[in-house]
Image 1 (cartoon, rainbow, N blue to C red):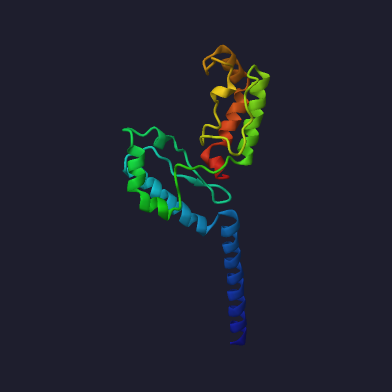
Image 2: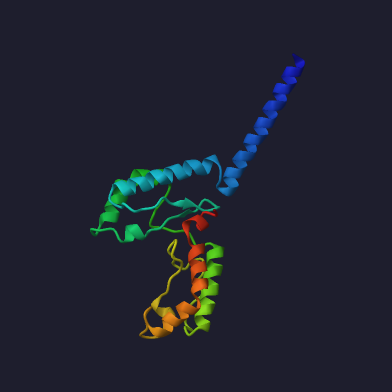
Length: 190
């Protein structure tokens, strides 16, 4: 009987330590059951947006530190005008429960900024001397990277201008790496 009590106490201690380790993992890495609850709430909010007219809205993902990444383009291009605002208003309860504002993105992660800086260096070396290096606060679109601004291009040029096309062709692999670094699965650290 004494042996069974000691074995039971040891088993309880092992389970308690294991559960405590899992709780610490949730808090520090954003993984585990706590993030599962958050992901479920984010899915519910995204599903609500889809039901209310934003049909191709993808589920958001959680970054390593619990930041929420999502592709906002379906909201930005929703028709008719005001459809996105109407969907967000209809889903306010779900969005609040998920502690999420789909209009906001966290700062760009360091790996994405580094990939963007390599692409920018290549673009400058290939005829676009004003092409800027991105920072964590630069505007980006998940799955599409930082993109180009008018300030990056020569005066009067656009993406179809031969100089721009040549630079994009020469830097294609680095631009593709920037795009890969901005994919939702990469932002989620998967």
